[in-house]
Length: 488
Image 1 (cartoon, rainbow, N blue to C red):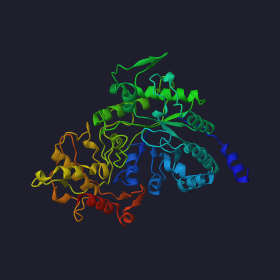
Image 2 (cartoon, rainbow, N blue to C red):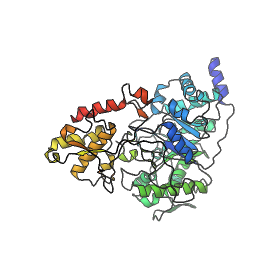
Image 3 (cartoon, rainbow, N blue to C red):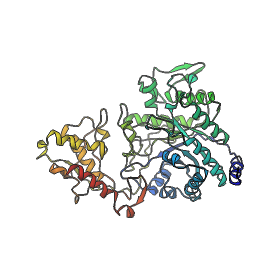
């Protein structure tokens, strides 16, 4: 072993700080959206709502800089693809220097390696390479005298075998060796392990779709006893099941943080705003109570998923994935929510400084709308799968009851807004079938949105750029070209 590796190994076992569980309620901030709030606006929103713990999936410079000199505890995510690109310890050290060391005024708490890297529920592949990167990352943090920052890894509940009783919990046979190795690495550094729980999905998978059992305060008939422990909601079941599975692979009493939990407001049966409000109010009260679960009493650190909707998330594994946000894309809260867990009917603080585009919409021109043949109509509707987000029109969603003409108008408007209402490039032309109106075409259940004037626009590689750089050429212009290629 050369001198460099000896140094790495020596430093790896210095200063193994323990994790203090406070029982806080943090939030995830994903940014896969066509247009989005600039980071400084988001940080201000978080501060005004007294949200002190945040997990970010985009660790770009402008995001990290926005958190500089704040007291917020930050968890940054290493994308799954990077767990394949980083081939050795030196590569990981470079990544840690770039993301962590060059931002000394950010209060980093965790580096999450991958997003559910061993799960197949929301991805068509797994990333077992993440386990080695997990070890390398903590060694790199220790080498940089950053051992108080912990490398961690989170898992969705599909890593468990499908049983109902927590006492029968175990990891799937095909994952047992990887789960064993990863939890042992985490244990060796006194780092926590993350669990992602989406109760609405869990009750559909395990409890015959008993939605009531997904709420913390409920009238469910699925409440049951497992030995001497009573389980009154599906979160307690999944958390304790994960704990049992960890114990069975030699990792008992690990600190388990809930790295993602939430309720979608659209795109799935029972995914709506009233249910989301009820769920989140119950979640906040549960976290504030610090009572824990039947098997693991005590405080649990929890991150709500998600701050705002992400209309560029891959919807192939569920349209609801675009509707996790407790905020709309423009920084307006979807519902009242007491983050302190006192059960009060209080309003979340909205984002400040957001500017909407003019109140105008693109709809089907009534004079020629009846002339649209079926082939052309289907061509327009196909845009929902390739260009714009129409998940609100899917079965059971908020816009599923639109007439055929209203559906086309919804598609036209989404394309118009996505293209930043650019009339010079005929973003509401649609072969002559579209027209711009100033009267809101929304229905009582379906909102036809007006976009925000974004100061930051994502490019097609998912990286943030300033507006000035984005305009050379802008993502808006590129999007318009795509829209016009399809519709003109």
